[in-house]
Length: 128
Image (tube, rainbow, N blue to C red; front, side, top):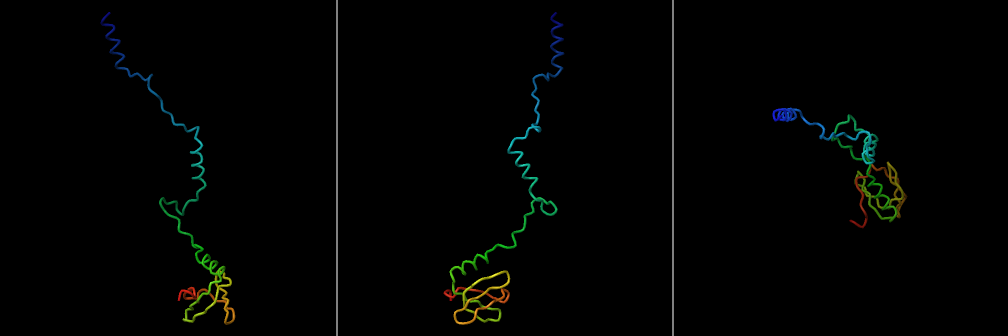
């Protein structure tokens, strides 16, 4: 009887016991709320050119800094000096502007419409 018990114990030791192992299953069928939002965000984002990873999008072509400066000077009716490409100085304040030109109001002469490419630089009259 002693021999029969030893043979069964040896038989059990050779066979692996899989009954106590825990099965790990990914939860693919039930995504949580945050994960589904991330996936939705990824689908909505536009791809860059060739889809190259790490490529930055170029900065905006227009920063609106020029427009902000003109608006500020127009509202304050700041006396300005406009130096043209040929060196001529025009004194006046900005009445309005658009993409290509500025309208200058002058107290000692006629109002002028100046094309932006013809302006070398602009400064406030008080900053001389």
